[in-house]
Each structure stands twice: as C-alpha cells, then as structure tokens.
Image (cartoon, rainbow, N blue to C red; front, side, top):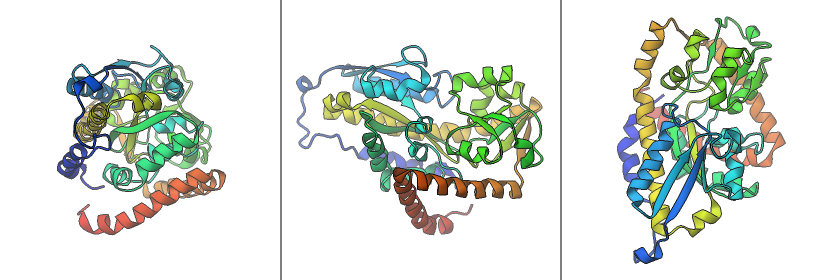
Length: 357
C-alpha cells in the first residue's frame, strides 16, 4: 500500500479547480438562484465515527458555502426512511437526497458493489484515479440510469482499508468458517459464502444488537477507530487483518435528478466541491486515527491477527471464481469489471515503479 496522504496537494488543486456545473459566462445573478431545502437521509447513523460523521461534515460545508441558497438537513436512519430504503426514496422524490454506499444495493443492481469496494482491489489513490480520470464516474451514473433510478450520483467520501472481521475465537483454518453466521459487506460476502459462511448484510445500526443476541457469530464493518465505537471488542476478541475485501470504500451522495437539474449552476458547483473536499478529510482522518485505536484495542485484550499468506491466497482464488460468475451473469458487471481491470493494468506500470512500498 502506498502512503495516501501524498495525494492531498494534487487532490486539493484538482477538486477545487474543476466543476462541470459552472455557467459558461459567469453571469448568473442572485435573482436566478432559487433557495432549495434538501432533506438528506442517511444509511449510516451520523454518530458513527468517520462514516457517519462525514455526512455532517458535508452538510455543514454545503450550508456554509451556499449561505441562504441551499440548506441541507440531515436525517438518521428511520427518521424519515429506513436505512435500506435510501436509494428508492431519493429516486421516487420522497426526499431530495441520500447518503449511502453503493454496495448496499447489490440485491437490486449486481454491478453496484464495484463502485463501493473491490476485493483485492484498488486502494483509495488508485480508486479515485479511476473514478475521476478513468471512466468510473461515467459508468457509475450510467448504472443508475440503466436501472431506472432517477438519481444524480456524486462521490462524497472514501476511507482506507478496513479490518476483515471480528471473531469470538481464533480462526486457525478456513474449515472453521463453515456454518459461521457473519455480517459481511458487498462482494466480499460472496467470497465468504464459498467457505460455508452464512452471510447477512446488515445496516450499521443493526450489527451490534445482532452480535450481542447471537443472531450473528462474527462481523466485519470498518476500521479500528470506527469499530471500537460500535463496541465489537466487548463480544469478539479476535480482529483480523488485512482488509482484503475492502482496500478502500467509497460513499455516495444521491440527489433526485429532477431536483439536481433544477439547481442553478452555482448551487451544483457548491455541492460538487463540498463533496470532493469531504473525500480528502475522510482519507486524512481515516489514516490518522487507526494507530491509537489499535493501541486501545490491545489494552482491552483484543488479539490483532494477520491472516497467514496461504489463507489470503485461498480468499484470492475464491474471488477469481466470484468474478467469473458475476461476469457471466450480468452484462453490466462485465462492462464495469473490464474497464476497471484495463485501468488497473495501465496504472500498475506507474505504481509498481513509483512507490517504495
């Protein structure tokens, strides 16, 4: 893994120097800008460190930059709509905007997880490169359009690698995964199924109660500084690394397309630039807060375990099988996978030579 913070300076210049929403002559007047109130529903609880907090960062940035022209009000899950209803609610116009991660929609759209995290896939630097300098954002929007979701999608966050799970007992062989009930996200869940795991995709707010009541035996969710706030260490004392299933995870801002098209160019630019700035903050906080959290976990009696190479290789081989199946099942998954793979092959010429680690 390369050191993500090296990207901050070029990212800042890129994010704030480009926007497709600027008016061509810069002549937009205040009279042309209609005030908009946006109800922004969330799949994540906003009290959750980083992954929830970054929604508050985003809303505050938009409100501050827009002054009176846009006012965003954030709603936690179940305040207006349920966590897993965010996409449908925004598309239908029930609410104006939503915050989520596209992997949660894999039951509706097979290719959706490719835009949130990819097992053994790109880290944050490479992933952002594909989104903004490759075809990532174009394909991302096209995916929602093809499935008749009336939304405009923007990236608004990304976090570094996660851990690959919290277990009550040490996992000494993959045979011990057989029959385990585990919360797992995205395409990584399809890999775990190959080893007999009964996978459930639970929204964040339901994970700890399910773990506590024995509905699930194990879970993965995010990074140590996030997971500690959810209290997994109280029940499961074995935390496994690396996060092979999610080397980077993105978060999306969904805006009802009718609402987006009615916004003035300056309002669209404010939202776009606030979302891009949010990405930088998420990387910085994500990278900077893990060391202290891991130290605290050791003090709590948590065993921080690294999967042996032979098990990682088995996960990788299972991923190859999953890709082959997904490509055969869904033409759009195939299209996105081939585009991402081609980008990564070219990127490797650079990354394999440029970085010291």
